[in-house]
Image (cartoon, rainbow, N blue to C red; front, top):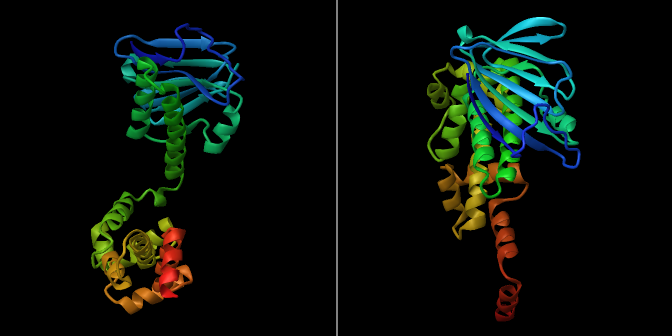
Length: 295
């Protein structure tokens, strides 16, 4: 067995640590691999803290709901304080296991917020890397490591929840559309059409439009227009340039169409938006001087 772990405290306690003086605290985090030797664990009264186990590779044998279950790679197991823990890992299954122990008065609220329970999320590399980041931080204990550990733990729980939602709603787990969203955010000024987007995703026009609307809640062209308008607003807010130039940089070839789309989205015309931003960003002393010159 190979056991790699990081701990908050120098002192170890086989039953863990319970600390209700903090909202949330990670006690320890680790990784185990079993190459030659089998592993058996039974804690009749569990531990004092919470334990989250992620099976990244292989399988584990867990006693849950008064029966033994074989959990394959991709499963998550949550143990609450004082809950019976009984599980085994067999070398023949070549398991790669990640675990984390945590405590605090807000644990249940945090778990409820992220919907974390016993579940299947698949073999997720991001989850594995987050465990490894936390282990390293707890080992090195560099400046602000406790803050970084908690931040990564929150990201870990959020990633588990997202992965769970994707396995429950496979139609949303469309990575071709995810790639397109990233492409549109960097190349919004290009001459996109529904056909061009569908071709990028290697889908038919009708199926692409259906999947895009189902995932994003709006049509592909509405999404692109909204994105371009937000980019135009950025140009108008941060650069001194004519409205027509901002429209062109954002990907609108027709200034009149841009003005109509902008007003429909924001409620005001681009020129009004530009002047309202300019007035808001101009120092009051400069506005007063300009007013005196006009008088």
